[in-house]
Length: 153
Image (cartoon, rainbow, N blue to C red; front, side, top):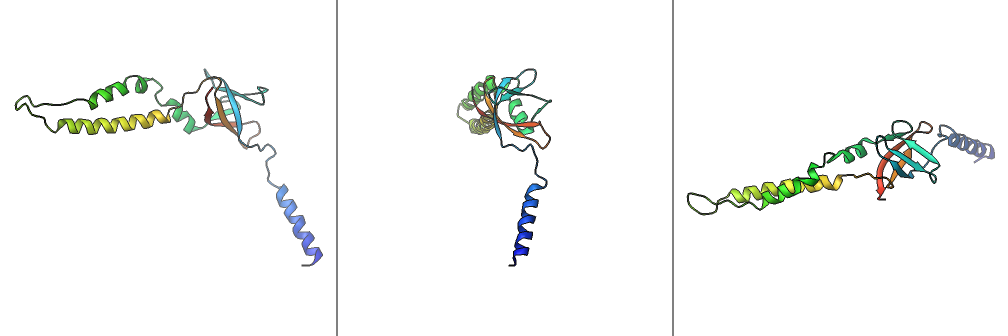
């Protein structure tokens, strides 16, 4: 390959590397939760940089969905005992005094409900002050998105 052609390709490669590269590109950042109500506020860089929800910080829909699971607390407080009690129900025919198929149906239904309950509770996200979350820089300068919780306080 001629020296002139090699220089052309080297110059082209250098110019392609320079173009369209965001100036504010950062890798994911570990931030600390400083406040959760009324808005989420996180800090990073030893607390020197504070990001406020709906200002510089946006919350991912996935994270918001997880944190809203069991928002009322009913799933955690009453559903486990209700489903555990339903699973232990036995049925006896008052007419014959013998067992029937109803307990099997109730047990299967209770097992299905327990599985759904346990899966939902496993997804649940309890965010507290002092927790660490993963945030990432957006293309807009000084805008970030909260992706997920990574460490408990």
